[in-house]
Image 1 (tube, each protein chain N blue to C red):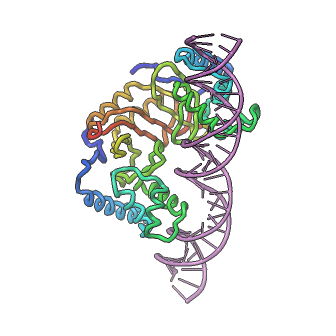
Image 2 (cartoon, rainbow over the protein chains, first blue to last red):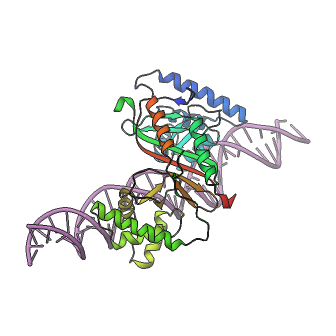
Image 3 (cartoon, rainbow over the protein chains, first blue to last red):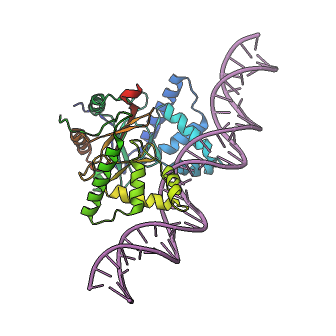
Length: 161
Length: 161
DNA sequence: CTGAAATTTGTTACGCTGTAACGGACACCC
DNA sequence: GGGTGTCCGTTACAGCGTAACAAATTTCAG
């Protein structure tokens, strides 16, 4: 099994987060440029809010944060921006939480598997291709053609056990 | 790999569904009795509505169906009943759809993996213990302790391809 | 440049999903 | 048959998400 399945590990609660953010922003700019799409100030702001921690953020939390810098933002502003970022592969939605989180490795196409700490809320992102292949095998057994995977595991991270 | 991972296969659109329903009801009664809990008329009705097809049902659809036989039911009636059935392991929630579906094999403790047809809406339920073990292995690598899995695969069933 | 077309964002209004809190009804058990 | 706990009804509201249309901004051909 390859070692590179961890896309975004649980970060120690103290780490150089400015570095994470800077990396993510650079990647986002690159991805948008490559797709011929615009990384507008609004999109950048929402993206930064999502990367302000390694925890998922809810849409209405984003809205509240936006309200600090913008004038009376409304839900569609946030949801449209999230849609854009998701289509660009820069953000994932966690269905089990109705919350959103920055993708640890945009550019490469993947669905991702998420480990969500129930205690501190921090999320790790994996991409185990062997696992994906096994799901595909199971699907084939019953004649199913896979389009999309939602894999979200909740439990406790090392620090919270 | 064992053959018994398919808990609930995609049923042909024409099959003896009365049989599915009867089996499910018998199992539900057994599970409730064993847990020392009551399978009340309301719970039975909701359960039957969930088993009226092999497709997931939304809470407000259940509410509308209930309205045909009950007097002005309100959301808490449905959600409480769904909570009960989920805790008893008789029903699963599909997070990616905000919808609910009868469990194909209550009694045995499992989380289940779901294959959801985007076209006809029918859902198959699997329980691949090898897959679960692999997720556990991945989790252990980053010091994560698994409590709960959400695995929902969307795509096309054989008949809809 | 400049005006037309396309994209992005603002705004209003609303629909769907889910829960808190309280009170009444019913089953169960001594 | 009275007390206790479970179940259900009811009201009210909080959280999640979208439709539809208007205004602003960017882009790009001419």
